[in-house]
Image 1 (cartoon, rainbow, N blue to C red):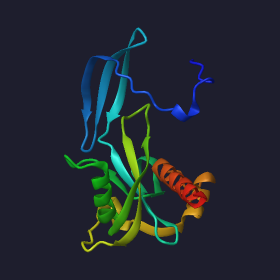
Image 2: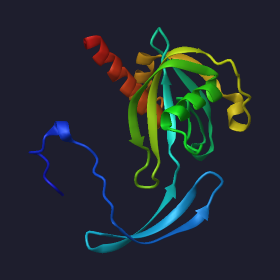
Image 3: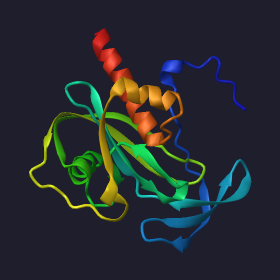
Image 4: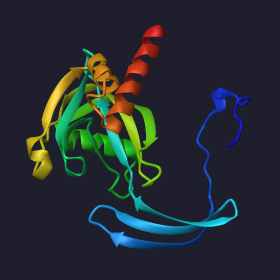
Length: 199
């Protein structure tokens, strides 16, 4: 372990590392994402790791004028839950930026557009098992989209709720809502509003 006690906390950041890749192969090709197996050299050792190669995603904390956040509940088969989430979608359109994806997903998932957009936080969701990064945006100045979207499969019975941001924070901290992207988004939004209020 490295002693970081003397480091400047204001400069803390994740460090990019580019190890020597000895071999890399796709061991499973899925409909949305693949599984890769990499052999790489790190600290003098050749290591093998399998991981999900993920395109990344954009997510949205949509906040109305009453500081209510829009939450959606839908079925997620791997966890056997209808969990609460914020609107989100894959970065699966070539040439589209994370912000452009966020705008598209807000319209497609909940039929909303937003006049104001700010970057909130970016998170690696499961760094030991995939390379997914999710870019979370704060959207304000909301209005209905003029092009409603049809929803099918798991999205057909999506439940939409406007929840006071403070109540969403409490639900996260009490373990009643456990979606990691939702937790990151609502906690970051609450802190942003606190800083704005403090001037």
